[in-house]
Image 1 (tube, helix red, strand yellow):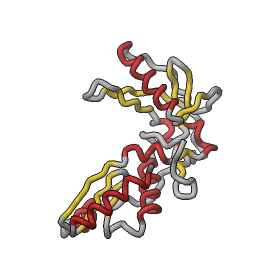
Image 2 (tube, rainbow, N blue to C red):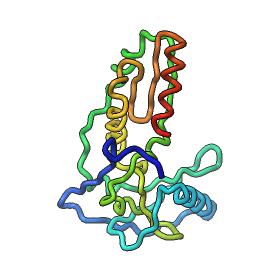
Image 3 (cartoon, rainbow, N blue to C red):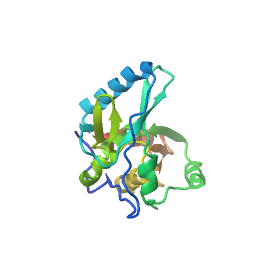
Length: 200
């Protein structure tokens, strides 16, 4: 499984000392959702994002969210884990600043770094805390999953580390949304071709 170098970004899950682990019990899911959940778990397992686990202190349920195309987004109910985690205060940029920095350019490309979340690895000591339960077993994430309290801050920290010399010049970054901007067509083609290569 490829991913960002751990020296650039790795997601950690510190726990407040007064908080005890929570093991959620398996909740019922509509029968028509079960097979879709199984398919999504298999897809993520085959991609190397998941690992089977036993005896985990933290266990969360899956919350299936139907998509317009009939597929299911597999979210995990990390509310208990999020309440036990202190807030990461890494700053997110102000939208007004990003808009202002972009206004005097002629060319724009908007990019969604959705799959970039799967390129940031979980800290090995914290992987088991992401455990979720299914009818087919319990699994934890080896990469940073959606739904964790500080995932946005970790992603933004990675973007700043990768693009610090380009931010507010050729690009603007807000977590997994990027805007490539330029004043000439030639410059824009060059910038837009470079950015997707960072996460491959």
